[in-house]
Image 1 (tube, rainbow, N blue to C red):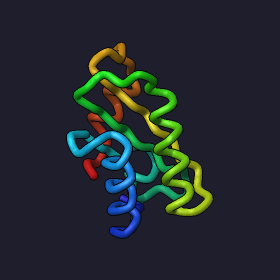
Image 2: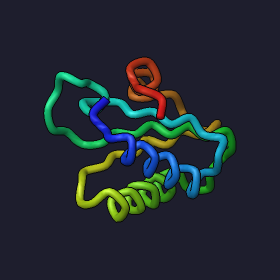
Image 3: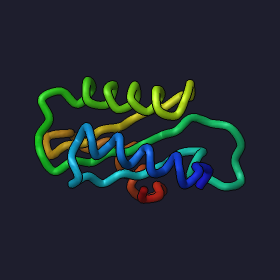
Image 4: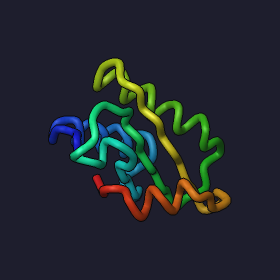
Length: 99
């Protein structure tokens, strides 16, 4: 995983602030691959409760993380119980690293 311990703590803290403590949080994509270079921070966030607006919640987390971590490209995929299954969800769960 190509995130420092400090970055991991910040990501977990900001995610918990926005979604609560009961979330599954995974890093996936190129930052989960120690042999890769560069790349954005791809996060998979699964919550156990229905969200009013998943896209707005994902945007809030991405903005909070950019402010806390600096200007980096951050992509956030948010899944709640009403989210239709998509291939990216399976890939993030299968290949992602729990934070």
